[in-house]
Amino acid sequence: MSRKRKAFTAGAVSLALAAGGLAMTAATAGGATVGCQALTSGNGECGSVALQFGHLALDDYQQNEYPGNKIILWTKSNADPAQDFYAAHYNPAGGQFTLEYARNGIRSGLCVTFPATGLGTHAELEPCNEGPFQTFTARASGTGGYYVITNQASKLDIDDNGYGNQGTRVDQWDYTGNGNQLWKPFG
Image (cartoon, rainbow, N blue to C red; front, side):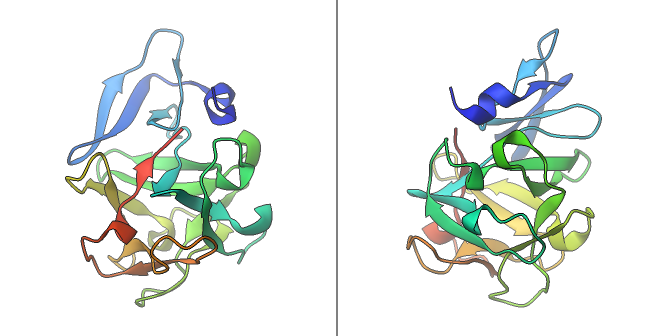
């Protein structure tokens, strides 16, 4: 069992990525174990989720918890604390969420942010504020449980412009339908 799965139990509602968006189901009495495949909400907060492209995952560069630190792609690992992101501040009405960095399950108060709306803008960590530059929606791609993640400020999708190269900075781009924009929870 991954560290992320061990770290969180709670909530009365379980949210899971499903075809067409996020599906909501009741949790078990006494709380549901939160793994990377599901988001569990309690008092407006959601549990653990990580995103992948092929063999890579979103990664906080060198585990630096400071505003402006870059988000890159690195070989995915359940044990890598640089890949501990949590879908927080879930809004069921719009299916919107933020991705907060939480190394080893400890929330940092820093969220994945696209600081501008232009094509190719790189993702970075900034203090969480639930604003549109750090709010996302997920929609099913129709390809094996993968999702397209869209930034609400720019209406652009999270993108791997390096097409699978380790260390590439994560950016945003128009929807292409290519594999470099398909993301999947793992854990």
